[in-house]
Length: 235
Length: 110
Image (tube, rainbow over all chains, first blue to last red; front, side):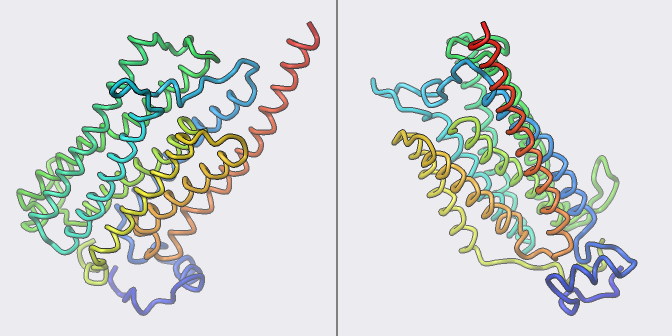
């Protein structure tokens, strides 16, 4: 498996031909876990794309006015109503947690156990904050405004269905990510990746590569939010 | 795994992550401003898409390390996206056709 030195292999499009034409593993220098995570994320991209494309189709074909997200998600602060305030804060929180995750991956590769663990923990808390604000947003819409998947007081009926489907599916991803972030923060603090302690589910040794793979998932969650923010909330 | 670990240690300076983090903040702030300033029409849509793609690009390239990955995996990830682009075009055409028939039969026809 390690008969090649990745630095000496051809790069760019020549490297592309070399990797695929070598009758060996195609993704040289890419751990299998990372390749699998990327392929999973690609399939997840298709699912989220289907949601957002059907949102486009519903919104473009309805003859009823679409609810104005800017007002629907506005908050009143000190007597003045600020459009989309909660969503903007959620966006900044998620980006911040993405930044701390990137730094955690960096310290993981430098085998800096403590800093990696603390930044993972910060990322998890950021994610938890995001989910908490989303729960607040959902309960406001459900109990205060009476939004249902089949009805809402603002305009086209499909709005509620798309809101719950798109943000719910994304929120599920965030929640799963938060659970794994806490699990991996514990593993890092315990030193699992330094001592080669075997995982509970996998019974396999792992190392800080696992943090990068977890990081890919977390950045993807942030990435999806970028598109949801643009197409659902801003458009 | 395990054996070919030595070449995988590509760690970058902390500064680049902080820079990208800051940039993402700025882009998010501007895309929020698009809504706050109540830009409408083509200006609104083009600004939203521009900031969205800029943010997505920086997240994928730097945070997800795609910029440093080998071309073989970058291509596997990015080419299927063209299928999504085609799908968007098909469904946009479909949506406008549905809208047209609805207008025709519900509004004009009745």
